[in-house]
Image (cartoon, rainbow, N blue to C red):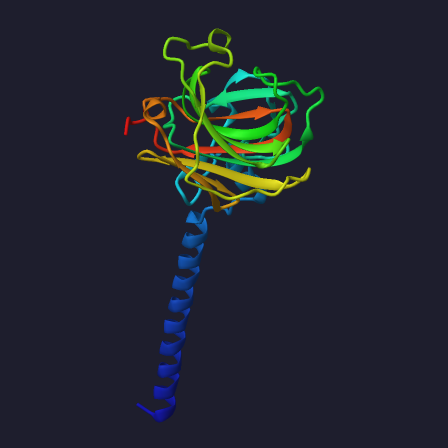
Length: 260
């Protein structure tokens, strides 16, 4: 075979191999396109995010939704349109009480923005006039509960007390009876709040020790007496004469409070 004819055969063979390779590449690309899922549009991703349950925080506490919150006194305004996760609420009434049934009552967090005093402002059952925001722990009912309160006025500071009336279960039955203030073994002063400021109040019971944190700083710690430790119930929140926007967080694990 002449050199010229040999070169022609080599060229034809090479061209055939290249054509087969190109055809295979096109078929492969078409198959990939046929099975590829379309990308989610921003709208569909946003819709799923709105429907999803609120994610727990790093410390294992979950935001409370409106359907989880049981109002025992007062009225809440849901801010779902402004806060898509559905966990933020507004309080404009002088007295607000709420609990989260089926939760442990040893820990809770309240993220809140204080907007000022309510109109009207009404005194407590004791006759004293106070502005305060706080947490309920081991809240068996309105007559048997532990409070960790952030006092706003007349003076700023953390106050812990518990209410115990074993034979009573409705606030109308026990009234202002059964309150005991817990003396701290450690306490830090708090600055006076200004309207529009945002803060975080956290309370936690560990064995017989109750610790309260304000904006991540330990500001109160004390030993709970036996009468307080026997209480069992869920976590919750309370306000008196305080206009607030808030988010309540509780432990993810449900169950009864252990008697420790």
